[in-house]
Length: 439
Length: 178
Image 1 (cartoon, each protein chain N blue to C red):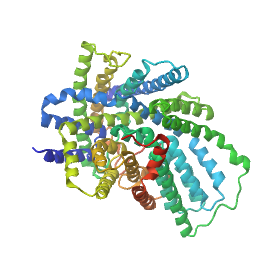
Image 2 (cartoon, rainbow over the protein chains, first blue to last red; image 1 turned 90 degrees about the vertical axis):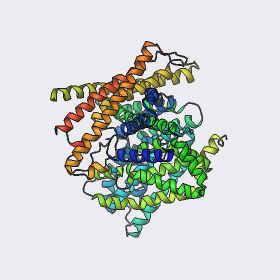
Image 3 (spheres, one colour; image 1 turned 180 degrees about the vertical axis):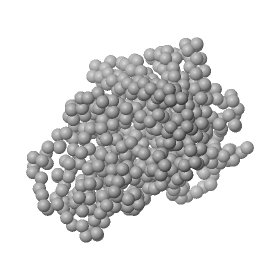
Image 4 (cartoon, rainbow over the protein chains, first blue to last red; image 1 turned 30 degrees about the vertical axis):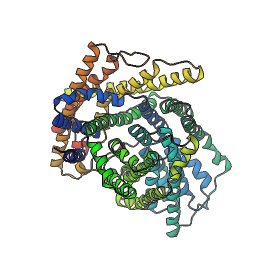
């Protein structure tokens, strides 16, 4: 059997199996075992246990549970509510100020938790009822929060970038920095669109009927500022090269838990257990997929499938932008169905040689890939965030939420195009602060 | 049968707590390492190994708990759109398949662990850790995972729990972080 036929066979089997609803981690593992035995015999199984273990036995991977814990500590405290209130009280007088403070709160909360669903739930729970109360149309209120939530995986620290960094051996600090400006740009696009659409629908109110006092404006700030300081500190140690991501995130996680306990008086063992349990669930899920994906990657390379594909594409001499377009479409379609962590771990080892051979910057591609994953989070049929919004605001029909998100999906496409034309938006900050990549 | 399902669930609950504590341990050890290394300028020996092994062990040992809580993420678009009968059989198929993988992996990992134990393998780090201790998490965790899968199979096949955890005609259930 030629490698091409093998490749098609593996690809079809993997897709079919994933769609059967089997847990991604075990599905990938099962496929790998079956094809290793099929094409190489039972001898090939001898290295499986060691491969599975060594896929996880890596100090860098420790940063994943640490960042997850940081997010869980902040997510389980009422910090989201305070952040939202603080921004609203400062911005409520601006026309469309509520939309700005919602999306701004999403962007900041995204940086704090790094989790898209958590961000959506925390900000949406306050933001959506408030926007609807002040007369924003339902689709704008739900759509903007849905989209704002996805910023969690683009604005650092982001677990998505860690996964990409590990899968492709790209510097995680560099990836984090590369996410900052595109993240802000995308937030800007979201805000502009929201302002435009509510203006176009004749919505002019900016809450003239009430005022917040200066005291009210300042009450929430001291509760939120320490968390933002911790994240800023983690980022600083990372790009300063002072400590490794795992060390910085570990200390950050400990500090976030302590702060959550002190500021929000979370003394109860139950509340501690909640943070630990959420951290454990999320990390175990991601790490199991990593182990499964490492086994899958081992199977692909030992059957020479990755290499065959890379050579085939290199020999086809496709224009590099056509190639990039094709990769984007491929990722988008994957993103419609498969969770981001699984896509990144499965595809990036295959895509990276192709990307590098075509002369693209792997850090820049990490950002493009992440924006693609964001689209999948708010686009039907899976669109995790849509379901979360649906459970927060059950009286808004799902179709309204879906239509509400479409303009934001277009904003993301626009961001991808802008990033293709001006790659410096992603690469300037890391290159400027960490020096250009050594080739 | 209910006794078996109950027992396995109790076990998964316990190992879930152990996994969570392992992660907490990792956080504490990282803090210790950072203080020793950057505040007192000492060389650290055992910390990196302990942290890494704790997290890997937590992954294996916590896996049965995560399975019980339906935390192992899957693509649920097809099961969502199937009728009740097809969904039932698809659920049985995915459980049997995952269980078969876990049994195979458990067997391979147990052999691997036994080798590391009988030949007294050491890590090639400064600490020269005895590898069979962290490796033990693989046979234990995966063994429990197989037991939990057997419980899932029984509960799903006998209708004690809905296939894929989806009630008929319902959108997927998502735990929202509070």
